[in-house]
Image (cartoon, rainbow, N blue to C red):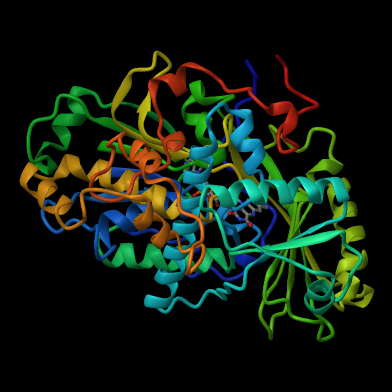
Length: 529
Ligand SMILES: Cc1cc2nc3c(=O)[nH]c(=O)nc-3n(C[C@H](O)[C@H](O)[C@H](O)COP(=O)(O)OP(=O)(O)OC[C@H]3O[C@@H](n4cnc5c(N)ncnc54)[C@H](O)[C@@H]3O)c2cc1C
């Protein structure tokens, strides 16, 4: 077993990300004190928690029109003050990257590796659609992400992954020629580069927009309200809220906040990502904190504006340039400059000087120089850290909570462990949690009527057309294999989650360590086996 310490509560004096300079909901509270009862309490106001609230209350297709439950969201910090408000701004659906590793490390996992990629591509497409349809001002660009390679062996491995991914229907990669590199990157010094579909955005603005929409539709939202404990409500507490209950409940939960206030509730949803195991200690080692660091510089000249995002070292480093007039570079990575790889570190109140040095040196390196970012652009430098919630097997935990004996806990749900990849995952995962929870509040007739609004069968072509890797895909995912993915039958109402995301008793009973030594994202130096 790996053993990790308690991540604690989110620190109350975090480093300041540029994305949080403005925050229309900074210290929002729906009322001076918490409501005594709420049908559903969501903990965490990042992309995950917000997606759940939005899908329950405000999404035109999924919101409940009858028996609408009362929903409250509690956030330890300012609105969207966790990883989502501090991240690199990339929505990069995994494409070829890591495909060989994913499909080889786990026997027979190629299909699942493909399913995750399709899911993420759909996730990104849906965010683009959302932003366009609701006119969200969030600097969204969709010109792709360019992965550059400095090492010939690494590049050849990437090309092998790319060929393998194509066989499974994952397409639309563009291999840069020397001429492309000169034209797009201003350099031919890299051994190779590959562009894949992806987007860049100002993430917090999407979240604030969705929270506002949810508030308009009934959400009660409380910032600076850390949850410190969840326990069974006592009979007296249940009696005290009986007027709010539509029927008698034997069991309700009591959510306690740090200030001593409490809410009695039917359903608790943990959307606490890196901090999940503070409230759920049996998740330590399954979901653990990993600190990431970002530097941002303002533009003092008019350097070339990249329309795309940039990744180095298979995504360990990531950069984007914000639109003018801002023009800020947002550049993150270099956890490898730290011996611990920043694993098991939940302190985002400070930056690591070793990472600061590595990030600054890299900003002066050839790729950024060639893009016109010269030393004099070290102007208004901002640096911050944020805490990612990695899971033991790279997949988020989505669904009902299980206890340490592998038994389902009635009335608690989870969505955490997004593993550095939340942007293309959270929105759709949040929808799935919202769907499952909401069924408790619907009549069977309502549940059935929702199902028939969508086709009840899923095939490869539908999924691929939703994923839209390529307008004219040359490769198709084998429909019979997709059928087997669908056969877990968790969702006839919409397409299913990738199997690996679903929380199961089996997943709870083991901690995955397969492939850790091959993954630079994992603590190869520190595991205590
Ligand atoms: C520096 C950095 C760069 C990143 N770059 C990218 C990127 O470019 N692309 C990408 O896809 N992903 C990136 N990620 C990862 C991505 O940000 C996350 O996967 C995603 O934001 C997770 O969303 P979430 O809502 O699950 O978690 P969070 O956004 O962390 O939300 C969890 C919330 O729960 C709150 N909370 C926790 N415990 C409690 C409690 N006890 N009581 C009340 N509230 C609590 C926290 O304060 C937090 O606001 C990056 C992460 C970091 C830190």
